[in-house]
Image 1 (tube, rainbow, N blue to C red):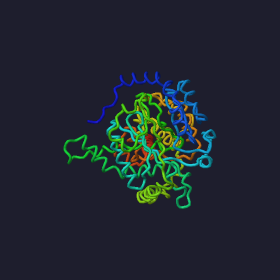
Image 2 (tube, rainbow, N blue to C red; image 1 turned 180 degrees about the vertical axis):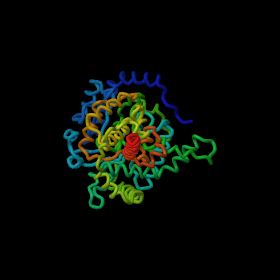
Image 3 (cartoon, rainbow, N blue to C red; image 1 turned 90 degrees about the vertical axis):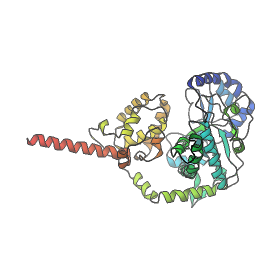
Image 4 (cartoon, rainbow, N blue to C red; image 1 turned 120 degrees about the horizontal axis):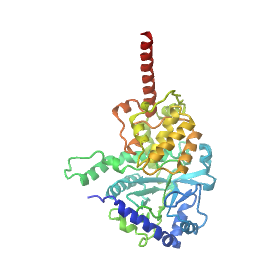
Length: 436
């Protein structure tokens, strides 16, 4: 049977333990060094148990790790993107300015599941696919809780494809690769996890791949992930580095911070080792989306509609469900709501009031600093509609769009059509009353 989730009582005990061991753990010079070495050219942010520190930030010296720990830091997080100078980053920078600062990016595949055994299987299958594409040097580490992180470094990718600088294609290229890997691993994942879930080998559970879906949201501008050997607040375990051979037999006890052996998370990749993977993923994406350029143009030219006398009764069931507050996937939900509200012409003050009211309903609200940064990022960019109902955003937050919603493509179209329909009905009703 798969490993069960850690009970809440046990989690609270381990949360208390992490407060007790951070000073001792991060005071070790070898821990400071391995975190510092990995931080070079990356934006970093310490987490002070309840929330993250200021951004942007970086480590200037190895001893900074311990100094932050003494001030209450419990874990350390960093960017996939590599920057010329992380301290020059700002929410005010436009895409062109970010491209000028960005010197590259690593591909970070975040695998997480309700059960650790499922995450193991997914990681093993993804590594097999990467090996098949000629990638032999792969970084692998335990997330610290129920998942794993797989790393393919910037060095392994070609610096230019068809005259386009690869460094400028973040997050698009990493997203395409991740989707490609999801598709290529899906059938084997269904087979392997079904063997665990169902004794009848002829019955396959076709929903199992969704339980171990790599995190597409992690592949977004300035998103952070837990650094190697950083502690995890909920488990008090270390994000320990593993070799692919160690994955099968790995158990959480192997990540005991007082017993771990240190390894380099950054593999010694060869130049261009991941070129075949990138080319294959781009070709696959082109086949899946033959009209992608045309679609991008339509989104780029999207003009929001100003809806008068707008009521929540015009909102789609999925949007209404999100607005009730959620426990998981809050960042995904915020992304959906921001694009939805802007695309139906909602005024800035009203939009921010609704986002604040929604966040207060969440089981654990998002930090105000994060919401503020996402609002600024949204206002700086052109208005685009929210993700279509058939995208992974909704399943990722536990929402299954209705068949009716799927006919309307996305929440904006749904609301616009419903608004028009209700208004037309009201006009006809009023006209009938006036004539009588």
